[in-house]
Length: 349
Image 1 (tube, rainbow, N blue to C red):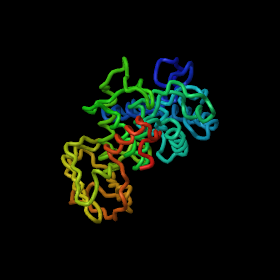
Image 2: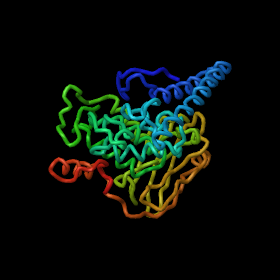
Image 3: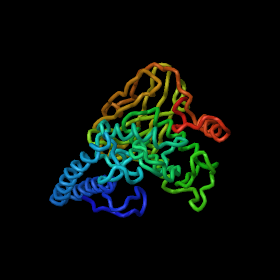
Image 4: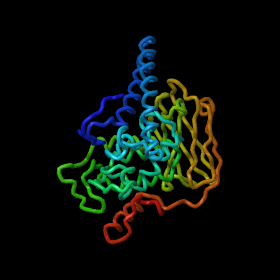
C-alpha cells in the first residue's frame, strides 16, 4: 500500500494510510499504462497494469475491513475510521478516480452519510469526518470548504442524481464573489464572510467550477462500467431547460475528439439534440439525459446516429422545482437575517 503519512494537509491524519492516496495511485497507474500503450510500449504497459491489479487487490482487502466498521462509509484513512477529515474519500472512489462503480453500495453509503452530516450552507465543511460525527464525536474546525465539495457533487453527477447536483451547483455559485471568484476555506458556517489570510479568488475552485459546469453539459463516463460513453446534459437547471429554450455548447474538447457545436432545443414534448463533432475515436455510445422534472428517461444513441442527424428524445414536462442562482442567494441571505439555516441550501425548494 501507499505508505502511511503524517498530518500535512487535507485528510490530516497522524501516521495513517490515506484512502485517497490509493485512489490517486490507481488512477495514475491506469493512465501510465494508457500512455505506454499509446507510445507502443506494450510490455511496459502490461507491467504497469500488473502492478495496478495487484495494488487494487490489496486495496479491496483494506477497504473491506475499513467499511465493515462503518456500515459502508469509506473513511479518510484505512486504519482508524474515526480519524481524519473527509477529502478524496468523499467521492467514494468514483470522482475523479474511476476506481469504484457508481452503484457500489459503499459509494451509496458514503454519500448518504456525508451530505446530511457534513454540509453547511450547501457546502461540505472541513473538519470531523462524517462517520465520527455519527458516532458522537464533536465537530472540530467546521470551516466551509468550497472546492472539496466537488468530490461529492461530481460523484452525484456520475450517479445520475440530477437534483442534488443542481442544488450543489447553485450553492457553490452563491458563495462566489461579485465577479464569481471562489474561495478555499476559513469561512465559518453562518458566520463572518472574512476569509482572513486565505484570500480569494482561488484557482483550484475556478478549475473545479469550470469542470463541473462542463460535465453537467457534456462529459465522459469515468466509472469502470461506463468507459467509452459520452454523456449529454447529465444535469441541467430548470432555468436553462424549458419548452422554447435551448442550450448551446461550442468547441468542447473530449476524450473522443472535439464537439464543434452541440445544440439542445427543448420543446413541449421533449428535446432535439444536434451534434457536430470531429471524432478522434468515436464514443461507443452517446447517452442523452432528460431533465429530472420530466417523465423522460436517458436514451442511448450511437455516434453514427448522432452524425446522421438530430437526435430526438421525447418526454413530457412536470412541475419544475424552484432551483436557481437567485433563489440560492435568497435562502443564503435569509439564513443570515434570522431565517432557517439549512445544511443543504435548496433541499426543500
